Image (cartoon, rainbow, N blue to C red; front, top):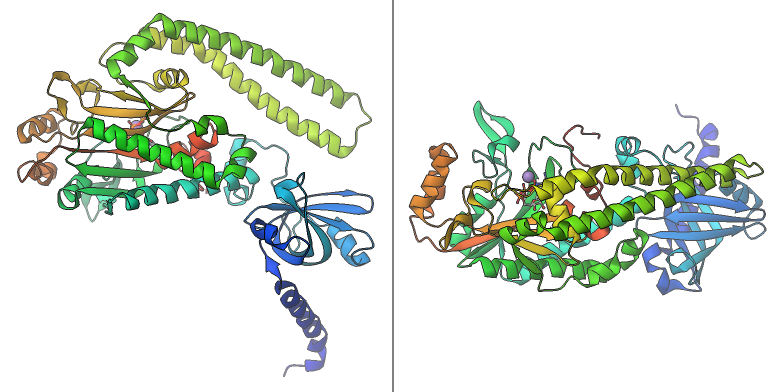
Length: 526
Ligand code: ATP
Ligand code: MN
């Protein structure tokens, strides 16, 4: 039998807590909506992001999923007990805070809360990720928690806008969404990057692109797109490659190369404009180059592959790389000076703990910048050599793309690559049999390729020849060849990588930060 008398104490206090929560929830709002409540008392539900006490005042930075807000608790204005609880509350504790909204230009997000009451929901102690810097390996291992950081949050919000813009652009321009399969027997992008899958005893793999199936759909719907995860067993660790990434691919019947370039530049400009419109605050927090994004409007630059090779092997590239080396060396000196100043300061003593922590965090940051600068200095002559000795016929390498892209302030199309360097389905240029009608779009400022696209070979015999040349199993491609047998038309499309686009727009150097749970060649963390 239950002894009610024994239970009544805790039950009462539980009821009181529930009532209080209910009461607080009556005027619940979100940080992103505070502008509607200036002068009013509201409640925020969130987590303690950071806090600092200064005598009789506590500054609590609260995050609630929609933003950050500084909440100020003053001794005497809240109960003694609450003031004390808040003072010892650990980072990432969850709570409900009630207070009066004040507009303040200088404040984070433009608004502050003068705390009148609070309800602590769950106390956290020893949260492993502190506001000071941590190594990337540690952060990836703790990705489930690191997602709460301001940087990851800003990137996630921008990624959301990019994906929304992608869908909007195609939906508003007469494209039909077609979902293409993930299990496939086809190898459109070379057999080296296939992930094997055992499909009830039949060898299959995870798709590298939806394009081939999409071509079939384009012959039914005219203009189509697919959007989903894509898999490539990339065997090199670069900042531009994941093994699982999201790609959107439009495919259009009755289109030539010029039409595709126009579609791509309108599309990318639309994405950039949407991010500028919806995520200015996030871009600012990330220190992204907003002025550069404002320039992303059609027309983009256009270079043929052959022109790109001439640039790479010419004097212009040599001068450019020499100048860059000088700049990086100057930067290195500046970083070294700052490091020694800070080391000196921290050794001098008489500092408060928070000052020491701040210096330690800055030093971690500066040392990682120094390592980056050293890599640049090391790579410069290697990249210069690769560029100078570039042979017509090879695919452009990562460093070659970086150089071309660094020389431009807007995205640049590189078109007409040598046939031998490209996929079997690309259409041979009838005016120059050595090249195909394709393009890569390189994002500016050194970011590199975000789109690859082409007009597709629409001649049955030429396509068959290319499939045979590649040693692909014809049986798997018979249906694809059929498309050239029954009402073949000029058609083409392209693929844009979501993570690379987000990395470029946010100025994030590594694409692993541009997806919530990255899959990398050497490791899947969580
Ligand atoms: P790269 O030469 O840089 O490996 P790719 O030529 O293999 O790229 P495509 O096959 O043209 O790339 O794919 C279209 C787009 O998909 C690329 O422009 C890029 O944005 C994205 N993409 C390709 N591979 C990856 C990857 N491993 N990780 C993330 N994005 C990728
Ligand atoms: Mn690739």
